[in-house]
Amino acid sequence: MSSSSSSSSQEAFLAIYKEIESELLASLQSLPALSTNLKQQLVDYYSVCLPYTVPGGKMTRGLTVVRGVQVLKQRELTPAEYKDAAILGWMVEWLQAVFLVADDIMDASITRRGQPCWYQVPNVTQDNAINDALILENMIYQTIRRHFKSHPSYIHILDLFIDTTFQTEVGQHIDTNGTPYADGKRAPLDLSRFTLDRYRGCVRYKTCYYSFYLSCALALAYCGYDPNESSGEDGKSGGASLYKKAEDICMILGEYFQIQDDVLDAFASPEVLGKIGTDIEDAKCSWLVCKALELVTEEQKKILEEHYGKHDPEGVQKVKDLYRELKLQELYGDYEEEQKKICDGLIAQIEPENFQELFKFLLGKIYKREK
Image 1 (spheres, rainbow, N blue to C red):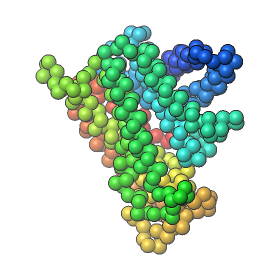
Image 2 (image 1 turned 30 degrees about the horizontal axis):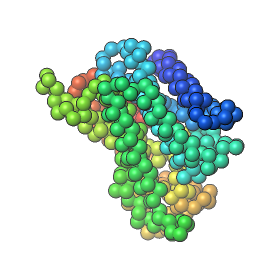
Image 3 (image 1 turned 180 degrees about the horizontal axis):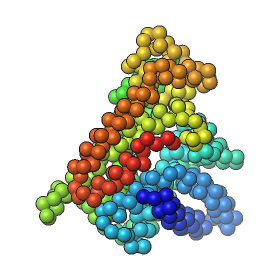
Image 4 (image 1 turned 90 degrees about the vertical axis):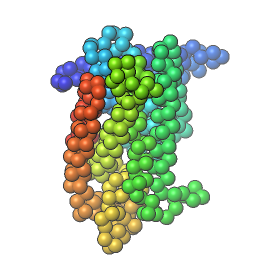
């Protein structure tokens, strides 16, 4: 896809966002038993909150839904089909916003997408931001009901969002409990909890489902593929097989994406990344620390014991220096090439063949990415 066609795709997609935003703000205006003044305060607040928290990223998750519907139908979409696919795509972006607003609070992050995290914005406050995440989540279901209540796949679409939200929240629990807490305070660092088993469980649930599988499954659902159909009338793979193959590839893509994210968190510049990485300070169970623990000598391990999980710039730098000493960036480079070969092989096995284009699109978006 050329840069000009990519730009026009994003412009068309953003136009649908503006329609959804207008609908949601209008629904606030119509709330019963509230004074005109209170309604206007709500509208004024969320007129700032929505464009600040929902758009602004690369929009890959949302555009994947549109691309998926296009490749499954094997033709240009009608205006009505495009709008439906884009609305579903924006609901994935909305879910992303829910998680980012909450995650930034939990991680005490400072910046997101090159600007202050939502809870850091003057006059928002942390308490408001927590409630905003809940309201953003509810807006997903309002929008799906408004536009898809009469669609044959309405229940399945709802189930996908309900299941994915739960899966991601389980992953977040595994992530935030990598280092235990006692009596409301962080317990002493326990490096034994940083294992690749914990890491893979966290990634599968926290990243793979909502960042990759949800978009692909929504495209299948919208196009009428039944997840319970074992084979089609023509004897070819039915819906169940397509969903399973999509899930298998998305689990690999999601793990690859998150490991990539961990490496960028430690080594990419904030200007390029759009945020300040805090995985070391937050004692995250990242791929880097898990791999480091497999390779360190007892002497090197002391660096992690003394400095991992502390908000000390000099200590953070010592951990990063250790990662370099262990050549973890080079190990990641080898891993990246291996994962690409695995994904290429799995993608080649997908039928119908046109559905392969969606996963080639996703792989192309993340292979060798720098932010």
